[in-house]
Image (cartoon, rainbow, N blue to C red; front, top):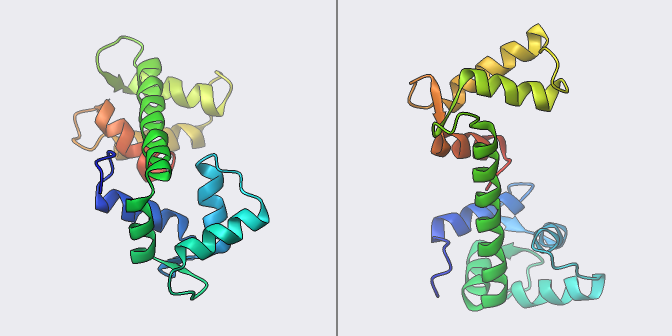
Length: 165
């Protein structure tokens, strides 16, 4: 397979993320979600044709090996996914830079609480419940326990929340 910036493990994670019912396959509806997320707005007939192309054994489901074989031979889709992945990474980095107010390369507790104020209370004081949640999430995001969050930790935290793939 051409190098497009996705490892086989990352591709499997992508497959699994669209296997919404976690049955080890992607059905027609799940394929529709994948295509929509890639910016491929397929009509019903186009989606049926795509399903028929991918579902080599005609089981009505796309198994991992069918998905992988199709992906490996489909440069257009592969590049769309890789491009979407790069765009998501850049968006996460921009968000990190926005909240790293002092440009230290870390989000300290004060900056973290500002994120929560902006997102969850319109810039006003956080409720006790939200403050507790913010502190709990800070602890989760601060994987090395140094009291501040690096860009890598921030991105991992976003992945854990499902905000970033």
